[in-house]
Amino acid sequence: MKILVIGGSIGGLCAGIALLERGFDVEIYERSSGALKDRGAGLVIQPDMMEYLVEAGVSTREIFGVLAAHRQVLDDNGNPSLIYPNDTVFTSWNYLWKQLRNSFPSLKYHQGYELTSVQDQQEKVIASFKNGKVIQADLLIGADGVNSVVREYLFPGNHPRYAGYIAYRGLIPESELNVEEIAFFSDKFSIYPYANSHLLCYTIPGPGGELKEGKRLLNWVWFQNKSSVELRKILTDKDGRLHEFSIPAGYLSEESVSELKARADDELPEILRKRVYQTKNPFVQVILDMEVPKMFQGNVAILGDAAYLVRPHTASGSAKAYRDAITLAMDIQETAHLQTALKIWNDQQIAHARALAMHGQQLALRSGLGK
Image: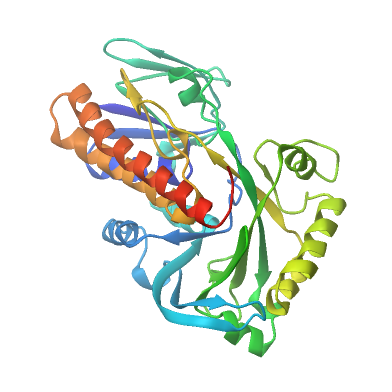
């Protein structure tokens, strides 16, 4: 069976690795012609995802990320009011992507392929690309993210919706912290909850995957409610360009940076306020909701963020893409008829995605975030 995967990010690579491992003829087609950019800094590696990727030879448990052995809840003075055991492993999008990319054959990973159209015929599916290439396969998998072209083909007009709040994010080299500050944050998951907001802080691998203390990065995430008018202002970058769902590092307007610092002065304890000021290039992630009625149609399937968006409070965005990919590969391998396999997979994964999305929305509401 020949399978095309559209999108070479985490979900696409997980699908490619799992399908290749099971003997399928699979090729990945990525829109970008250069190295993929970091898409969110820190993220959580869920235990089942780690176990699979270790078994698949993608990485070893020792170098997957930074273990936060304790979770500490901070009070209004920035002191830990509660500390308890924790076993969350944090990594970075870039570090995880590099490990996955290195585990997939370069000859089967094609860049500079922007999908323009899909034709699903009874026994085959045809993908056409902007570069003029036309490729035929038995199955096409859309792992092309929040702005999925494949989703638009399956369900025209099914677009992400603003959830009513954003996340400001920042990265700080540990080398820029003093000894006491490194000790305060090192190997801990720090949370500062307060009315209608909260800020998270944790350590992730350094830019080159460094795991040694002093060489890593401190990652912070600050959730804030914003009206649609405020959102448009924030998403207008320093050059006056309006972005859709995020502002990358280095492009936040001076006015937005000033407002961020002013709010830090008003609302954050000193240990966290200093981190906001210390961040050279904060960036913005817009929190979105999106779902589809089903995850396949004919010989075309979608997975990960192309199919469902879940709130970041679930710490499951990458894990959801991984589970979609792995279960799809397993169901295709174990079921003789492709359409039967896709239906089994769809029924299982869409139920999981709906439950996860609802859980994330409930967590946000408990914190006074969003609609």
